[in-house]
Length: 500
Image 1: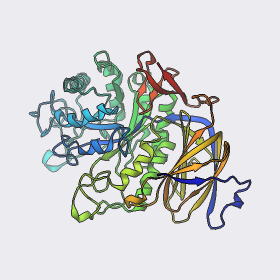
Image 2 (image 1 turned 45 degrees about the horizontal axis):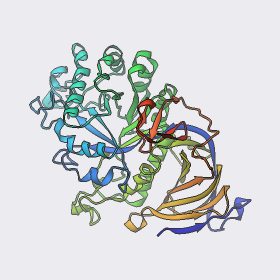
Image 3 (image 1 turned 90 degrees about the vertical axis):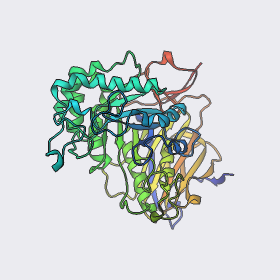
Image 4 (image 1 turned 30 degrees about the vertical axis):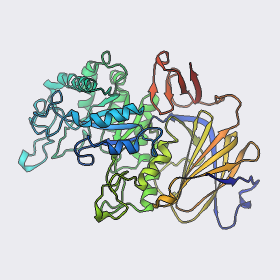
């Protein structure tokens, strides 16, 4: 049973409790990006035997799960047509099929990323990146005479997966094209990617696989030198649907925020497709480290991100325990870890919403002990609030609409009883100014019901380019052709739309 909290309204913030610090957050009507969703990768190692262990996706995915993930990343191994006889490939495309089927059945999105194209297409003749003495330090790149083979190879992956009952929603060009490795990898200079997409992007078979989207090369640090050239070329923009990258070495409000500028201008989605957040991989993350993860999720949203995909699903520093006793008794195999519940604050509530600007939107990734962001989804107004230090805060929320009721979802520590506690917020009459408690070292999701008799939200000022025909279902799946929508409720430009 939910607890009840009575909300009081104060004329001045000074009238709040003397022992709590104070902060004012003004939420505006101005909208930014619509959030497609959150997810993780189906990877060799964490889900051995490769991808066929479906326990992680069963625990993490779908609107009725405790976590609510809806995007899954798969590796496109360098095998030909799914067999594992190609050089240096000890797994094949079959591996991800069982997990992908479950994610799709639960309304999710699946996409594939090549770590390397087939070795026969490359300058070093192998799927390996080439950075090792045994490989003679040969820089493995896609040979220019094989550029025309690249997209047909991706088509063969789409064909194979469809034959196994999985319709893949998107394919990427390359995992970390800027990172020279001794494992499976392929190097591309920024202009290599422009040349590949500009001259051969039309070969991705969108007629046979309608709705499939193309993701840019996913650079190691989400750097502009890999994203802007694709957005500055009109032909490349025609073929690239999602601008993507990783966060290694750079906080979201640095390079990622800059890379999102042109993407937003041209109506492209922005996905963070890989990162592992931990201060020390040799132990279970403490609560402070999990709050830092919450801050990364929040800052990605503030940077313009529309999709966030974590690295492993199952690891002691990820979402599901591995059973390794050296990391403590909490690391039980196939049990949800605190980091998963942190992710659920965003995955279950922010997916499908449109971000609103606030007076507390961060402009840099340093120095703040509290962070906030706000969203609108149908008649729900959502405010995320994070306090990383022991000092409790009292937050005055100045909202753009009168609200009549609310729910507070609170996480305050790594113990299960401290995760995602729900309390009802009682509001005695519809109002726009509320004062709420935010405990020290806490992650808070405040969900308010807007006081509207109709189901839509009027008066929303749009600042980002968004097609009037673009609709999102309540799982965050994006649809560009409303004529083909199934009956149900969708979000279009901040409004809830009923399709009959």
